[in-house]
Amino acid sequence: MVVGTTSGAGKSTVVASLCRALARRGLRVAPFKAQNMSNHAAVTTDGGEIGRAQALQALAARVETDRRMGPVLLKPSADSTSHVVVMGEEVGVDDAVGYGERAARVRPVVLEALSSLRRDHDVVVLEGAGGAAEINLLERDVVNLPLAAAAGIPAVLVVDVDRGGSFAAAYGTWALLPEHLRGRLRGFVLNCFRGDKALITDGLTDLERRTGVPVLGVLPHLGDHLMLGVEDSLDLLDARRPVSHVSDPVRVAVVRLPHLANPSDLDPLLLEPSVELRWASRPGDLEDADLVILPGSRATVADLGWLRQQGLDRALGNLDRRVRLFGLCAGYQMLGGVIHDDLESGAGTVEGLGLLPVETTFGRPKVVRRSRGKVVGTDIPVEGYQIRWGQVRRLGGQPLFRLDGADGVPELEGCVSDRHIRGTSLHGVFDSDRLRHALLWKVAAARGRTFVPSGTPYHDALDAHVEHLADWVDEHLDVDGLLALAGEAALPGQEPGW
Image 1 (cartoon, rainbow, N blue to C red):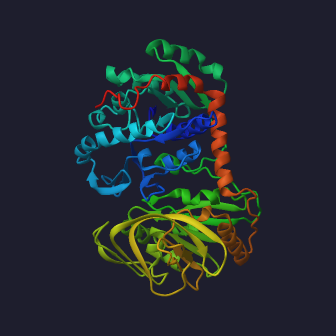
Image 2: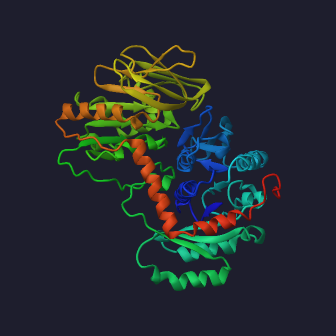
């Protein structure tokens, strides 16, 4: 198990790195996160939801996504409430206090999912959540060291050196833990270190002396290496983006919705050398944009209200006709005329932006599936996935995609208006290289910009990213020592239990 001193310490990255490093050794590897809190979700092959980070980790492990990899997913819908997904299926909405009772009920589900996954693989790499020593939550913690104790699994603690106070964070976490959980910690991993390692050698020695826990590695800061598939709120707020070296790049503005969902939709654009990508939170941020993206959201009606408060509704409606506007999932719904929502927000009928001739009705069953097909009128392929309560009905315009239907009947999906406005319920559409390049070429031509497409297919770039991370841990972390620790875990079916 990989736990951290804080959120954003690098747990997800270390787990993904280890999954690929171990897979390269010929081992059958799987990731696991008992409970994730994120609006960044993925769809398994059988139509279940798991956290997007686990999907990236599965890719790193070279295995298909599996519901067992993320048995509990909490999708925040407000400051104190979350939609609860258990084994891929949404089961209800809880507030922060009420979730305590559900946490007790999901403990056997979590342990069985982990045990089952371990029986099918040589190694399972578990990821914790938040800080490992949240002593106010230990009684209901199903994802950190209480799970390690119940499963009989050793753990290592990741510490972010770059934020400062790393020795206090490492020692404080160890010291705050009750004895039976403290014994689960078998190693420290310092992450994001800059400079000469000799400068911290004395500190590492002292930390080991005080705790009796060895330091298994010091991972250097990844520098300018672009991180893909991030889901932690601290990472999403990071303004660092690659700067285009083209004199007149295609300028893409993404509306920074308060309840933003599935930001990995944007990753392929980050890798385009002729694209300048930025967040937009006020009308002025859209002024020189060539393409505006209205992304997904976990609170469609609430974020539509935020758009109006910011004046972005008027700015979107007054875009130059040469500017493309693209709505993804909830963003697509917001672009329509009306949203009927008695399910998610309970707001009833709400007026949309009126920029696409569609209307949305929130209702059951929830749509969770992978989709593939072609752009209407072309042979350009598209693949993506849908996670939504909103059922969108097109009242005019033209469909955007012709998707393969489960029963052999094609599904005409999405909407295109005569004002170069497009919308779709599919996440991940920009992963399709031909679709992304065709769109950006049209945008560049309409605005007199330069677009030279990336020469590397997106999925190859994503795999190269994971390979880089595997090289990183192989060089700076005692991976063989971690494998030896893994060998000390209780056998599946012989766990101590809760």
